[in-house]
Every structure is written in C-alpha cells, then in structure tokens.
Length: 260
Ligand SMILES: [Zn+2]
Image 1 (tube, rainbow, N blue to C red):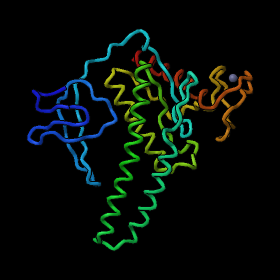
Image 2 (cartoon, rainbow, N blue to C red; image 1 turned 180 degrees about the vertical axis):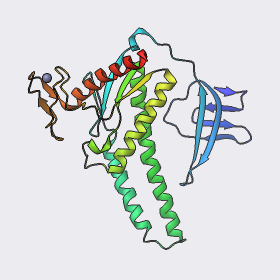
Image 3 (cartoon, rainbow, N blue to C red; image 1 turned 120 degrees about the vertical axis):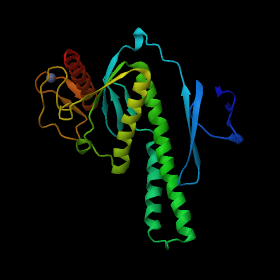
Image 4 (spheres, protein in one colour; image 1 turned 90 degrees about the vertical axis):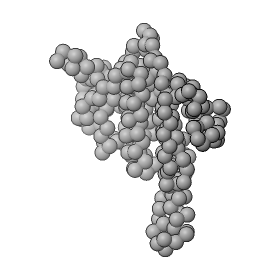
C-alpha cells in the first residue's frame, strides 16, 4: 500500500511526502495500492483526505449472478424482494444531531455579524452537518457494499419523494438527502464492481400492484402496511410486494433494452 514508499499507512498514521507521519482517523478498511491522496479543508477546520487505491477486479461467481428488487422507504429504508428489511441507520443519533444543528442554525441568526461568537457558532454548525453526513455515508456504504456483493443486477424505483410515506422522526431535508446519497453511493459501488442498476419508471404503481396476479388496487392508502389482494386474496406486505414488483418490472425493462 504505497507509492515508492512516499505515501504509506501504518496503523492509524499516514506518511506523506514532505509532511511526514500524521495521525488520521478512518472507519473504512483501506486495501489495494494507493495511487493518490487528496486533501481538503472543511469549514469546520478539519482536514479530510480522499485516498484513491487500485484494487483488483472482483471475480464474479455463479453465486452473485443474481438479481434483486429494492424498495426505498424511510422507516424501512431498504426492502429487498426476498423479504429482508434494512432499517434506517442510526435513526436516533441522526434525529439528535438534526435537532442540534437546527437549533444552532436558529441561534446563528441572532448573533452579531463578524463577532467571535458567530464564528464559533458557524464552526459548530459545520461540524454538526459533517457528522450527519459522515454517519449516513458510512452506513450507506456498508449497505451498498452488501447489496453489490450479493447481487449482479439491482432494480430500483426512480425516487418520487412526494409519494413517500413521511417519517415524523426525521426532517424532510434529511430524508430526501439520504435517498439521493444512498442511490449515488449504490451506483458508484455497482460501477466499481461491474454490477447493473436498473431504474424503473417512476409512474409504475409498484405498491398498488399485486405481484401475484397483477391486480391494481387503486384505493390503497398511504398508511396501509399490509393489504389483501381483492382478486387473488393474497396477503401482501406493502414494501416487500413493491420490491417484488420492482424486480419483475426491472427485468422486463432490461429485456426490452437488450432487444434494441
Ligand atoms: Zn392478487
């Protein structure tokens, strides 16, 4: 893990040319050969390093040549067609940080311009935003890692925030930001690993369609977590049913694209 020995990682320290050894903190395991390190100073006064490594391509085995459909929500953050549900990560911690930053944001407007207190407050606020961002990013990477490890093709719904169930615990801003961030990270990971992401049409009624008989229940209410299909009488879990439909629809879209 070094370029001619000029950049080196030893435990929790990084060696840089001209600078020497400095302490650093990371939650990710750095593997492969380091090809570059870029530094950036954030508004909070902290330095961040982006470490670019060359890692060998991941061999695809028969095992991971599988496909899945995922439904994105807020309490059930990711629901996979297999029935697996991944909850929104660290909801309480994010909620707490979100409250804190909103309070700081309000008090900032009451501070005298160019005062010391204002500057301090600003830095605190930046640190708060960074903490939220980093916590989410860390967990989203882990989820994306798992999904791309297991599946070759991942079908997703194009995000339609207006139709999403609201979660009163988290602010709207964080919910929206989270989805976009997660999809971005998932796409990035998929590209690195040679996986395919299929976005299905945002108007496709994935929640209202019964995956067994394709009957569409037009009057499905937002709060209904389970419903019984009036036609085939199957009891359906809202999010798992949606994920199953997303998979079916996604694979259909893929076939159409392949024929073109
Ligand atoms: Zn049905």
